[in-house]
Image 1 (tube, rainbow, N blue to C red):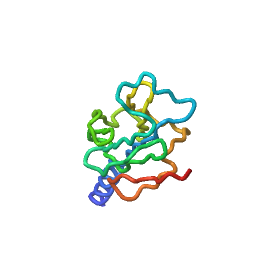
Image 2 (tube, one colour; image 1 turned 90 degrees about the horizontal axis):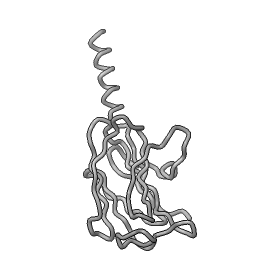
Image 3 (spheres, rainbow, N blue to C red; image 1 turned 30 degrees about the vertical axis):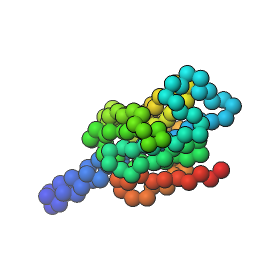
Length: 144
């Protein structure tokens, strides 16, 4: 009986080790956005390609966003971002000491990407993205 309980407990730990998700927000646009300090060459018309580890790429524009799901809460992850198929930036992150739900967003003024915790009760764009399968990115088509 003790062995069975240990096995079940171990399985629940493994299942919970992949509960992390990263919502990639669409690029800001409209009258409140400003690209004045941006020296990356990016504009509102560009497409960014975001990848975490070896998962499928998510294309991010002013009309599209995406969601990476089932990310390991234990391991470090590599984010790579391309602008019109040219390398732009990359960085590593982990969920250690952070929320299990993170937001990756673009600051159009400075041309920088940031990763922030999504706090309990806060809403983000990924609530409209439907995950497809474990360890894979899901894509959301523009809905208007």
